[in-house]
Image 1 (tube, rainbow, N blue to C red):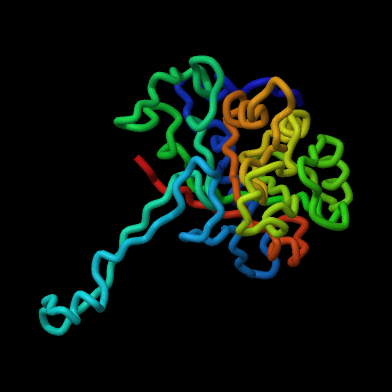
Image 2: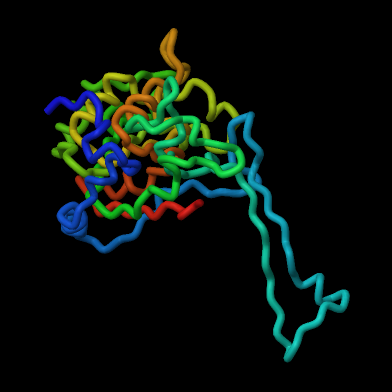
Amino acid sequence: LTIVSNWGRWGTDDEVGSLNLLTTETVLTGIGQVRQGRVISLAQPLGPQSAVAPHRTRPQRFMNRDAGDYAIGARSPGGFRFAEDTVQFASHTGTHLDALSHAWSGDELYNGHPAASIRSTRGAGRCGAEKLRPIVTRGLLIDLVEAHGGPLPPSWSISADDLAATSRAAGVEPGSGDAVLIRTGWWERHRGHMDYHDHEPGLSTDAASWLAERDIALAGADNYALEVQPSPPGTTFPVHLILLHQHGIPILENLDLRELSAARPRSFLFVATPLLLQ
């Protein structure tokens, strides 16, 4: 199977991309992976101390109502009191799923939709985050830390051969509709440090194409951009363009895969529910 692009595969109006592969059959396949009934969170903590890229604002929290308000005389009808807060953060902070409108080349988004549909006043008119579906499918962990005996060094370019050999050794083969997660060890080595956003090990372009050829639903990793940094000379985030732009495969970034790795699963039920942003 060789898939050069998914443009037009699900129709000229498609804005969902590879999440179209999440059928009732893939859901049942995912549920069939459950053996222990153990729930493992893959998210990094999100708060004021979160490591963020230099061009983004750190998460902030403001209390709209707290105990201090009542101490200075706020009304509490019938004795009822409550606390509320407001949280602000850049959408690409912490563990998040990139929508298909996140990256493109030229004047067209995934599937030929006009990039001009993205406006500051209304966000993405096409391929936006509201098109992301709840995800329930088979998950596979490609644990390069285990395979290499420790976290990958800075700027290590993960090849298609690396993915194939590690998958084969683990007895798994990525297939249609799978969620494939890549453990590099970058988060556990650089957690909380600003250099987390510099020189990360990650996927090469041939590794991204290898995943796309296996018709996966999404790809994720325990680093901030999935792909090796810095980008190869003459390119800028080429893996984003291969996965998001050419194949419509969402990218899950900033995972914490330590507990999942310790559980040593061959495969597992993967569940993710993106925020329904509009």
